[in-house]
Each structure stands twice: as C-alpha cells, then as structure tokens.
Amino acid sequence: TRDFNYVKDTCEGFIQLAMSEKAIGETVNIGSNTEISIGDLFEKIKKLMKSDVKFIVDQNRKRPEKSEVFRLVCDNSKIKSLAGYSNKYDLDAGLEETIKWLLNPENLKKYKTNIYNV
Image (cartoon, rainbow, N blue to C red):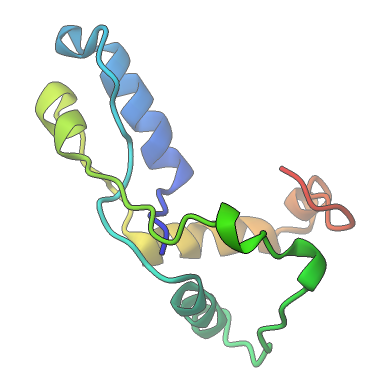
C-alpha cells in the first residue's frame, strides 16, 4: 500500500512548515494519513477515467522481491500539531485534478512517455 498526497497539499504543507516556528529543527512527514493498494488505485483511476484498460505487469519494471516496501503510510499528526496542516484534497479529488491535467495536450507534451523516470 502507499499513501498518496496531492502535489498542492504537499506544497501547502511545506509553506505551513516554513511559517511555523515550532517546526524548526523537526523532521516532519507530509502525507494524507491514508493508504491504498496499487491494485485498488489502478481500479479507482480506471473508474474515474471510464476506461476498460487491463493491468499488465512488465517484469523489467518490477522491483526485486527483497527491495520492496509493502506498506508506506504517513502519520501526519506531527505536521497537524506543529503547523496546523490538513489536506484539502482527498485521493479522489487529487486524482481528478491529475487526470484533468494529463488530459490537456499541452501538459502531456511535457510528460516523458517513452522512458521510466521522474
């Protein structure tokens, strides 16, 4: 499972931390405090996009078994207490914004579809 945070929420978290004197010198997680399996995320995106795509595993992109972290979920209680942060976007709203952005041909031109990196 993974904890996904919409980019605008992450940026807002950084801003709120920068403005909080209580956060100085602290290590703080910015996240949604919720988790979803990758399979369930795939199904959610598929439904939001009204798609009939199939999930295909590419063995070249699969991580070695012992390198995989099976559960990553943020405890965001510290950022809430130090900076008053809370997410404005839940997973569905963040996905809808991301899908809208990716469906814009001008934005999609910026996306490297032919290589696997960030």
